[in-house]
Image (cartoon, rainbow, N blue to C red; front, side, top):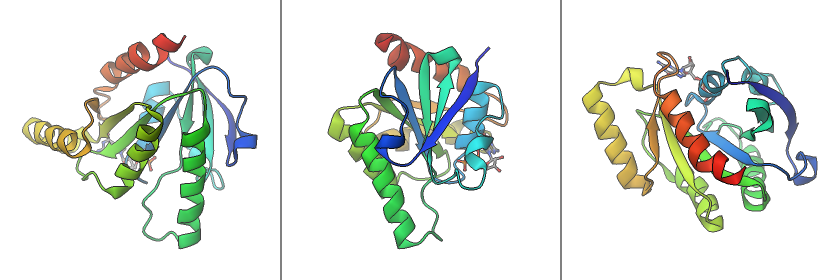
Length: 193
Ligand code: GDP
């Protein structure tokens, strides 16, 4: 049974937990379905921690599966209403984490399957490419599309992003996450244990 424990929230590098073990970061546009996916992965409502006031703008660290790895939940991006200062702060926080964290193994990008790859996603990919870190995409809300539409969305996303590892899940129907988690464990966790 998957399990998770909230460790702490942080903004600046000196507030991160010790740079030990192995970390996987998870990012996504606001409302993409990231919290629902984390809840599904942990079999709990743990991601609501990130939804409490004051914690939505922070990096939230969770110990996963009894300490096998740490999941770092990054704040959602793409709020049109956010001010220039807030955008700047988000950018700074995400960039300094992605650029400096030694134990980081890869970035999971959560996207609503109905949305296009934009320059925001390109920017995140730029950070990981810069360090030679892998990125995988989890397309959520697949229950909103037909099988044919899903295939088209996956093909279009792969083409636009130049990424190969694209997974399709529905947190509502609880489908796709087992395959995705097995892949994650085999490819990003196990080799680093
Ligand atoms: P976050 O802002 O990325 O953390 O997104 P949430 O997990 O809070 O989800 C945003 C909205 O999308 C909520 O209303 C969820 O109930 C809904 N949602 C999330 N995942 C799914 C899914 O797989 N299918 C459907 N139909 N709705 C979903």
